[in-house]
Length: 216
Image (cartoon, rainbow, N blue to C red; front, side, top):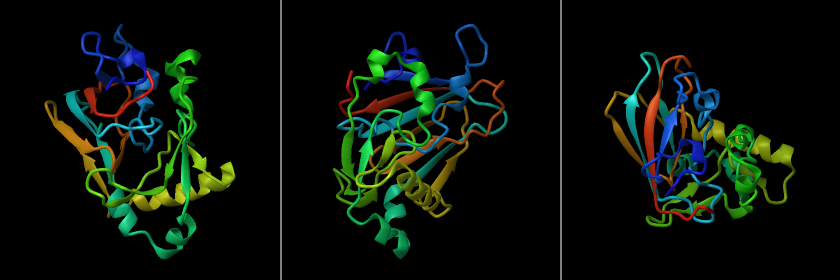
């Protein structure tokens, strides 16, 4: 499944993308430094997001450079009752880059590319398409809000859900070593670059996503 931003696609294998903070001339890629540093599901703006993804570590900073993962099934089953009451029956509206943390994503795309995406609605609480286990599905980059709620109220609720879903009980930090290969379930796992490395130190990885049907 190709990545959306053409700049980072592998020149020989379009289904593989680079996650890098290094430009072709060796300078710092400013967007690459902060790219994916907010909690998200890959392809959550697509009608059918990918089924799984993998990252392969090539160059790792000497300090930090980790990736955080959140188990969204555990996040659901451990929800406190007040949050359960607030989210009952809610539907998410997902649109490329229109989540609370999505603004920077337009920098890497031309208007004819990002305008091709249309809003996708899905339940906030939904079953995993393979296992059937109930999970939460929202994304700080691509979930614009909840049906029937104002943007302000949606953002406030997402912040409360995020604080719970990314707590120590639900989250895992992967400290990379060169040559590490990490695979995860894209339906049940939210993730982000931990954003804890010096921007001048190279952080270069390869990403592949499997399944899904992004608008191309």
